[in-house]
Amino acid sequence: MKKSFNENGPLPEFPRDEVRAAIAKGIQQAEEQINMTQTPVQMKRKSKRKPLLYVASTAAAFSIMIGSAAYVSPTFASTLSQLPIVGSVFGNSGLPGLKQASEQGLTSTIGEKHTINGISVTVDEVLYDESNITVGFTIDSEMELSNEYFGAGLDFTINGKNPDASSGSYGEKVLSPTVRTGIATFDVKDNMPDSFEMGLVLEGKGGEKWDFKVPVKKITDIVYVPVNHKQQAEGIQLDVSKISFSPSGIAIDYKATEKGTIDNSQVGASFIEFHITDQNGKEITSHSGGGEGHFDNDVWNFSSTKSFDPISDDVQKLTITPYLMLPSGGGGVQTDKDGTETKIPFDKSSLKEVKFQPFTVEVPKQNK
Image 1 (cartoon, one colour):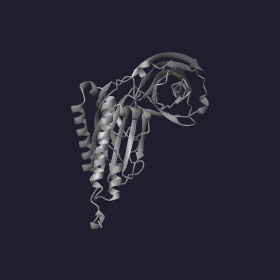
Image 2: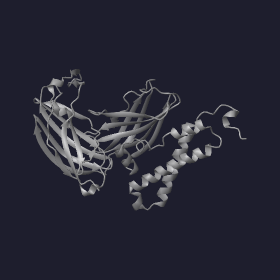
Image 3: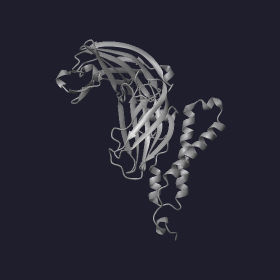
Image 4: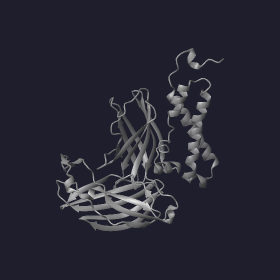
């Protein structure tokens, strides 16, 4: 009878670097093979190149597991299976827009890794579309990490400078006590360049600071449809300028104004969202989006880009209904020109429901 490996002594330290190096080598070999076998016309079609690369990288990891099964304990193999492959965070996110963009080769696969205090952070994938810049990354630690070890997640810069205003979201998916993936989303502003060097900073509770510099470029697979829809309701002037379609989703650009006072930014125009259904009444999932506002001549001016899931090829028309997503609590912070911050208390009595009129948008044939 064969003896298991751990009967001869303790298991060796998990070779994380060797595993990732092997996976990276598999990816590189797959890419080289694709470059050698595909014609120039096919190489330009990113939607076909990326799935081949992904399958090859999966096969690299699989071959390592098969080769290790003869002499490595089940614990080793289980841990290995939890290590995400570079470029797979979006595909496993459960978000249709990120998954589709990744499969069609619209994301930038980065793979840059830094290790501090036994905690390795790898920036896997970046997507820059009409409404968001989304970053997928992997955290692989030698020790168990607490649930909120990385606080609010990544901060970013544009060509070494902090953006004038930024908002977004951050979430983690725990794969094991020592392995997790994260997705950070930053809202796109009108004045952002189409390509730039993005600085990313992640800080840990132990004082660690992971710093990355990543080149990003806005995807070109975007179809813009001018809408120029305007309506006024209960003192709110709403102007929807355009809607865009891409493999990563739908984006609605709008501006809204409402009279108010400098001491109260909690006006209805700051809580505008949209409900979208197709010609069959099927709802398109919303992912909301941040916004910005400023006060000028007794009027609050707000602007934002709201994002939604991508639509299927059979969608011909969309019905868009604006509405107010009024909060039940909260507050805010107001900053003057000198940088002095003033807390703004929440006053629900100053808000009321507003009924907007729906409008329709024909889906362009280019999107199908």
